[in-house]
Image (cartoon, rainbow, N blue to C red):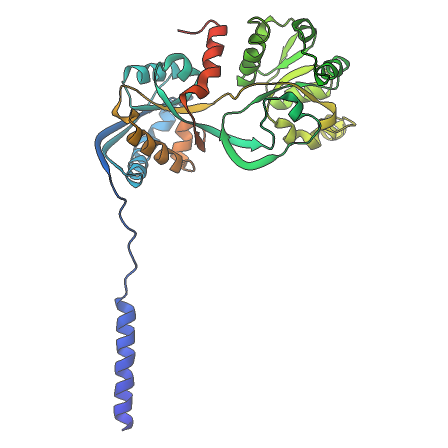
Amino acid sequence: MKTSFRLLAAGLLLAVLTGCGGQTAEKEPEPKVTTKIENLTVEFAPGGNLADKTTLLAPLSEKLQTALKAAGVEVEEVSIVLSTAPAATGQALEEGGVDAAFLPAEALAEFGGSAVPLLSAAWQEPSCDSGNPADWNGEETSWTENWTAGQRVLLLAGPSEYGRNLAARAKSGTELTWEELSKAGWGLSGGRADDMASLWLAERYEGKLLSALPDTVLFESQDELLAALAEEKVDVIPMIADDRIDAVEQWMRSVSIGGWGRSGLIWDETTVIGVTERYYGTTAAVSTESAWSGETLSDALSAALKSLADDTEFSALAGAGPFSDIDGEDLDPQRRLLVFSGKNR
């Protein structure tokens, strides 16, 4: 009887073990492919030494092919090519030499012709995103958890005597005249913030750009700009919205330990006197000469590219990440700036 019981127990145990051992992990379902296409060619204009980036091409081609399949499009061959100049990349898009490309938004606006923008580099969004200067004054702003394509530029008056005069005029609701602005000392950085400030001026003061201001000083970074404003070396600066958030402590920190030595909060001692439209950085676009400009393929390409935002090869070539959706009209400010600066083709 005991022997029979032991045999029965051993048989049950064997059955259980066999059943457990026979279980297999569930396979993830294959992506549902709705469209098949022969090839896709994407061009990047990353700048710098292209020889250092050639090793990234094959791995990124495979990853993009996989990401597209996950988005429902099976591509037989994905080719990644590099360009030495954004202008050449824009022309390749316009002429249909490539299906899609990553390039600076200003180069796309100038050289890309009818190419369709899909995505643009996203930045962390500040808690205020208004085009009205008054909405940026009187309250502190902070970074939100949202990321959005494009950034506004603030024209920021500082704590110098003339900066305070301009601030008082702006807060009273009085529109500042060109004469008042041209008497101010302006700090510039030579980047896109200056470009958008030029557009802001041109559309309000008969086409006059920053280059028409008589008193400007060029600095190498936004930090240097804010330092010059704090030290009252300049009266006004164009500043990416809202870099004051990251300068709150530095503004009041003692000069002896590397601060700017102000006695008041940056929110109290600076005033936004103008706000620009958004400007855009690295942008992905498709050629209207390509099959990829159709809605199904372009949507799949957008989804695939966004899924690669954290990929090291992708970021190294795109020069940015993550990316957010944009429309063709979003680049209108860059196009208008080309007209004012005489660069429109």
